[in-house]
Image 1 (cartoon, rainbow, N blue to C red):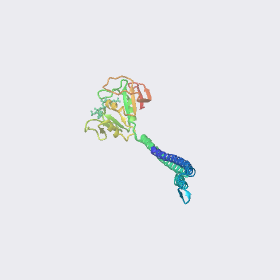
Image 2: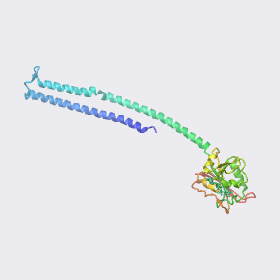
Image 3: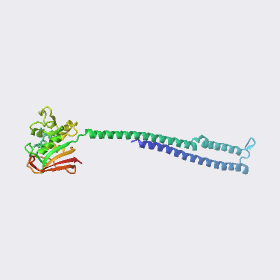
Image 4: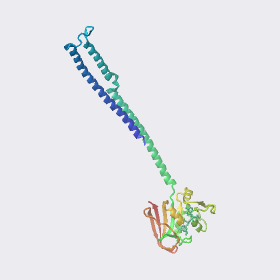
Length: 303
Ligand SMILES: NC(=O)c1ccc[n+]([C@@H]2O[C@H](COP(=O)([O-])OP(=O)(O)OC[C@H]3O[C@@H](n4cnc5c(N)ncnc54)[C@H](OP(=O)(O)O)[C@@H]3O)[C@@H](O)[C@H]2O)c1
């Protein structure tokens, strides 16, 4: 997220360099020490060769034995070597290491500060997008609701008509859908004597130029019907059988009137899969003078 990997590897590279330099420094000091020992032994041998064994005794320069010049020359090389280790390569000394370490620490601090700033920025943008999403969800995502009256055997219609008359169900339908978009199949639309007042009708048909009154919207599939209802916070799918079947997988809510009776029918509501839907409200009503059958109002929400 913050390009962490890149940053860490850069720091490691510098640390590795520091370690390699420290190892080099130890090797250099070791070599200088060995050189010093060799110089001592070599000088001693030269003295023995010349003074004890008399080798090259006849070679002198400015009345001095040759071994003195040889030792001086070697001494010069040794001093040059020591100079190289302690003076010329001083950049690898303790002060340099300290300086490098401070540089490294300050670089790391700078990176940490940068990461902190990026983190705070990112956190703020995540918070903002979450807020935006919440607002979107609460304001703009419609709650697509199926509304249906179905018998115990899921019967909903016969010969393009409802099978029963339940006054309370019609009242509930009117109250819930009032002012909303109602999405329906062409056959259900044709089962109405005329469009229902105070609702926006969205009719689904495969026919081109299907004739409807002016304020009725015609679309060619369910997606377009939902799209046409996008400004409604709760559009209703009101049937019939074909449209219910297609909407079961995408609806958020079902307002079911369960009529406690079995009927002969040609159109049925799909089974409500209890693994997908959770019952959130249930009220049982007896039959009476206006309602020929016992029925329940049940609300389901998608799990
Ligand atoms: N009990 C209740 O709550 C309730 C509610 C509503 C309806 N009903 C009953 O249900 C019955 C009607 O249901 P139904 O299943 O026969 O018909 P429907 O679902 O109302 O309408 C079917 C028609 O919708 C169109 N359609 C369906 N899927 C489509 C798609 N994917 N793309 C484009 N167009 C599509 C086709 O119209 P075209 O043929 O024009 O292409 C199709 O013939 C009636 O008996 C009615 O009374 C009961």
